[in-house]
Image (cartoon, rainbow, N blue to C red; front, side, top):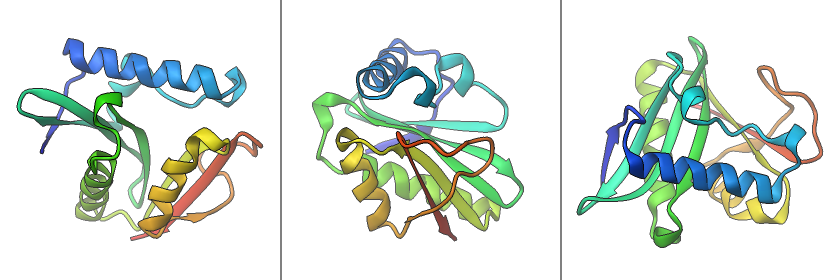
Length: 151
């Protein structure tokens, strides 16, 4: 698996982000959707990566700089064809390594609180993320779970 910085211009990425946004529509009410579209992911404070194998897109993930010591995991998504193959685990490891390299002291994330997001919450917990209060611009929301990890 090769993880590389991605400029979000390829059709495969556009499809995967579209799939990600559709998934949010299915499981989260509009006021609780925090997934970013392609334009939102192109902001200068976000670094976006894609995971590939044999020319096939496996998944993606991003890191948003909240401040010089705090980053946020964004847009973690595995292609439906590659679920349960370790793609998300490897992408999260990559994001955490980059956060440490940047000198962040904390990494946080927001994900859904509904059953559909249980695999994501379990993955994050397995890496030592713990539930926390809303951070950055987030507000308390029964449809959101907030997690954080000191690096």
